[in-house]
Amino acid sequence: MNKVSKHRHELRSVLITGATGGIGMELAKRYAKPGRMLILWGRNKERLDTIASLCCSRGAEVSPRQIDLSDGEAALAALREDEARHGLDLVILGAGLSDIKSPDQQTEDPAGVLKLALVNYATPVTLATAAAQSMIRQGYGKIVLIGSVAGFYELPFAASYSSSKAGLACFAQAANLAWRPKNVQLTLVIPGFVDTPMSQRLEGPRPFLVSAGSAARKIMQAIRVGQAELIFPWQFRVLRVAERLLPAFLRRHILQSLDVGQKEHARS
Ligand SMILES: NC(=O)c1ccc[n+]([C@@H]2O[C@H](COP(=O)([O-])OP(=O)(O)OC[C@H]3O[C@@H](n4cnc5c(N)ncnc54)[C@H](OP(=O)(O)O)[C@@H]3O)[C@@H](O)[C@H]2O)c1
Image (cartoon, rainbow, N blue to C red; front, side, top):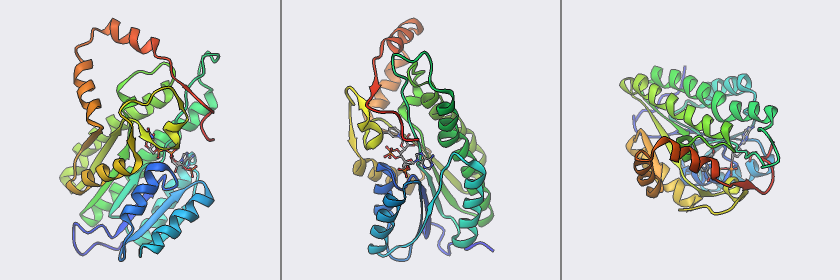
């Protein structure tokens, strides 16, 4: 039998994927408090140990798990195990990877595209669905998917990344229609540039950059009020409206002339 929160809005059990990353670590730190179980998933053992001890020192109970999310079946089994042990009140699916095709490549690397599609799309939507099943049974829960403003644009140098985030957005809209009436709130977070290792690898400007701490605060506020979609910083909300006025040929021209690179390939 699952553990069920006695108080419907008390987040006693919080699972975070990507807890070893810039945004995930900030969220884990901020959610850590006595009386709360933090289920922290990451791939890098050293960073996982660091964030787990920090959260313990803040009084939380911590259950860390080293896991590679490109194995979706293993991830699903792990979620079911954690859910049976601790229950799930809030599940934040923050893990993700990004990659940018260099100008000398004709296309992205197909093996990298497969991995990105699994980690950024296939596994998160699988875990969100499994979490929703359990939350519908317990009568309450919150799920968070982390998309990107890249999902608004057909980025020719990052087709797999931008489409993975667009796919998440479509999933989030459909799932919200299905799950909200059953008291499971899904929040889709759509960040612009956040100052973490992911964006620090980019070459070139990072307009409207926000700190990971500021991103975490905005995300926690959106979760608290059950917001369906959070786009930040605000400049990207304005751009979203303005770009709808652009003729299609001009939009294509701008996207094709964007010159973006990265310092090294994505961590595999
Ligand atoms: N930073 C930005 O500007 C920005 C903008 C828009 C959206 N986002 C999104 O925000 C989310 C968090 O990104 P971040 O900025 O915090 O990036 P980050 O610092 O690079 O962290 C990425 C996280 O994803 C985990 N991860 C990557 N591949 C994995 C795999 N195969 N299996 C398990 N975990 C894996 C990493 O684990 P390890 O470190 O343990 O390998 C790390 O915890 C991502 O979904 C990203 O797409 C970021």
